[in-house]
Length: 166
Image (tube, rainbow, N blue to C red; front, side):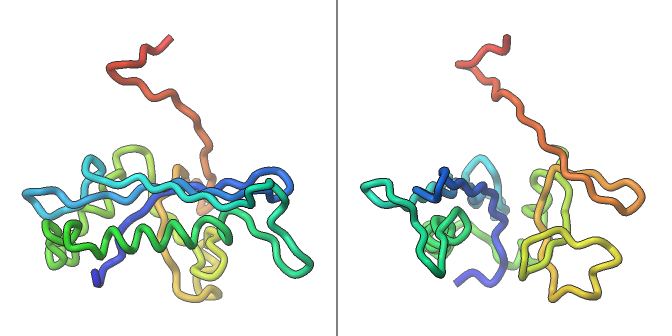
């Protein structure tokens, strides 16, 4: 089992009236030569849960949506991938532990580390860090002005060989 956290990226989705739940995400893969993580060799994983007859996934005591429905399945598949012999074959765990380039792999893309509560997943302000249980960090499209965090929401077209920008 890998003893270091592997960065992951993803988004939940829930249909109206909780009829289905999805999570689509990405795990970077190891480079063949350097042992670091790269976006180019990654894995896209999608999970979906819902009833065949499209009835809502809710009862008197529980409601199933993105994080409680499809995310656990996604995590199981992701853990299976990163703990597989094929994934670990080219991964240099010691290099990752002392040279965390992999956690900075998208820093040039406008993303920045944001401290979040491990309990709620919500961003933690500088004045709240002492109140929260141990923190985790996520990469978010955000900016900070005078200690106020502002998440940016942008949507951009992907351009490539098969797509022309208009």
